[in-house]
Image 1 (cartoon, rainbow, N blue to C red):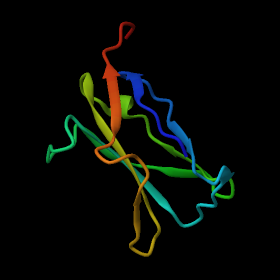
Image 2 (image 1 turned 30 degrees about the vertical axis):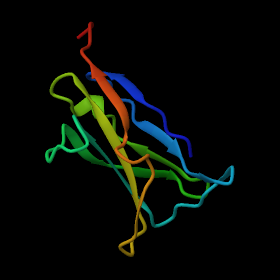
Image 3 (image 1 turned 180 degrees about the vertical axis):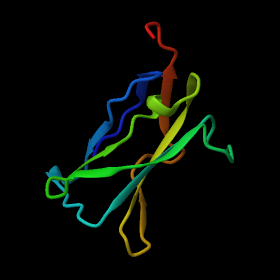
Image 4 (image 1 turned 90 degrees about the vertical axis):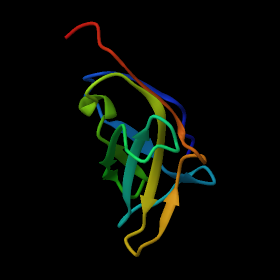
Length: 111
């Protein structure tokens, strides 16, 4: 799985779609859950957006979605996102790099 910085426009509703892979092949994700959180800075205590809970779209092929952070953003946001997978038995794997990746939710021009 390769994660990249995300730029969205406030109000965008399309979910973020991810595919979890291992050694280039899809990783089966039955029983897993996914959470994405956004903070203005990794050291902040409060979330700027979220946390948002994902949905499995295709477990066999490792595909899941997260609701669009832009759909719930009250205003423009520039910060870092962290994506985490939970295995149902208390295990946690952070899928994003340490301190997260950049995310920007920009003001929309067309309402």
